[in-house]
Each structure stands twice: as structure tokens, then as C-alpha cells.
Length: 169
Image (cartoon, rainbow, N blue to C red; front, side, top):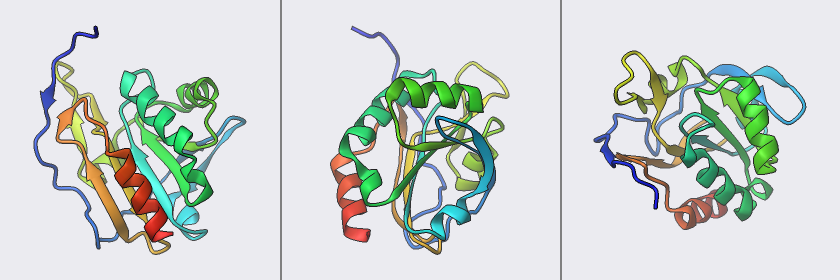
């Protein structure tokens, strides 16, 4: 049995349904390479499911990406992730998980801060990461669905995420 403490993160002042999500440009990583891309360049092509998660080595990343991969949501929407991990770690996670999804690298957690979902890691002064969060964005980056963790570890209701994707695409 895994032994860890549940950490209360509290409510977040995050972007919410009906609001326009902030645009950003960061390295976007796939299995082959990475390039600087903006979120708006993806939403210009259609709806995007933007998934924030802790760094790639943390166990929630495995659970989140296995679940999303197995649900094959990429058939209905562009699925992208964002964490504080660097592009090299992202490439490794994508390969290990057999993912077709791309991942934004945000080592400074500035994107998480803009979305109102960053928090300081317990016992690591100055180290910030995004709390787990899921945002479904339309072509104008208007939030159609939002879920943000209020404790760690916490995971979205994947059935709810899947329903939101199917009903808004």
C-alpha cells in the first residue's frame, strides 16, 4: 500500500466556464521533437482539452495519461498536457505511456499561474507546479468545461470529462 498524505490545496481562483482562457507559447513536445507553439494555434484548428498535471515523474502523471489515452479522446478533440517538466522528460513520458498526445513544457509554472492553478510544493520553497486541472476550450479559447483539484492527490471524474468532450465537439 502506498503511504502518502492527502494535502488540502483549497479553492483556486482559476479560469472557469464561459471565460476566455489565457493564450501562451511554450515548447510543445511529441515523440519526435519539440517546437514553440501557442495554445491559440491549436484552438484555431478546433476544440482543445488542456490537461495540467504535476511533473512527469510524479505518480499522478501516470494515472492521468493512462486513463486519457485509454479513452481515446483525441478522436474528438486535440488533447494536450502542461506541466513543469522539461522537454526531455516529456519525450520520455510520451514514449513510456505510448501516448499520441503532445505536452507543453512550463518549467517556471507561469502558465499555471496565469490559469490560477499554481501552488508551491510542500516543503520546497520557491518550487511551484500546477495542481491537476482539466479545461475544455473551444476555438475562441472559451472554457466549456473546467475541473481543478482542491486536494493532492486528486483526479478528475474521467466519465465527466469524456461526456464534456463528446457534448461540446
